[in-house]
Length: 158
Image 1 (cartoon, rainbow, N blue to C red):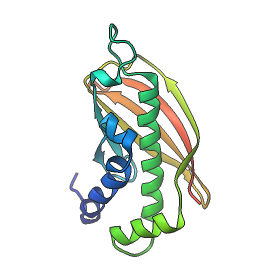
Image 2 (tube, helix red, strand yellow):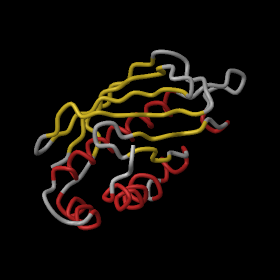
Image 3 (cartoon, one colour):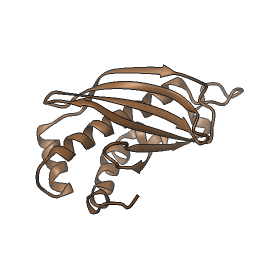
Image 4 (tube, rainbow, N blue to C red):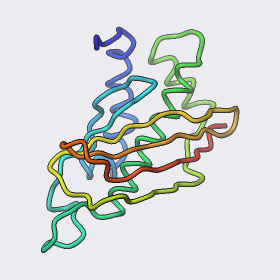
């Protein structure tokens, strides 16, 4: 898939907003893999700092919830930005920061199998975005495309 001009413009802005300026997202090592508004993706590599028990190395459940929450909020954010009629990526970002907020109201996670793997990809899709609330559906896969967990996130956007 070719990267659109606006995606190239948005990537550093969103990377700063969602990764670099978030201590927890930065600590987990999240990397934005795709800004496709229908299926944005975050990637994270396994590290010893992310396991629950060292004798059975797999992702801690809290880490799984955190990456699903991050991709859920990114999904809602991209939907909101996509609905803005005009302006550059920077102008849209500034308009969002001035008028909106994006906080988790509810997060539902279903853990389907142990978080084993070397590289994990979280993806999201929009269920609904209104004037005050956005809802997204998220999935986490490992590098073998095994589905590790799914989630639904509800975010305040007004």
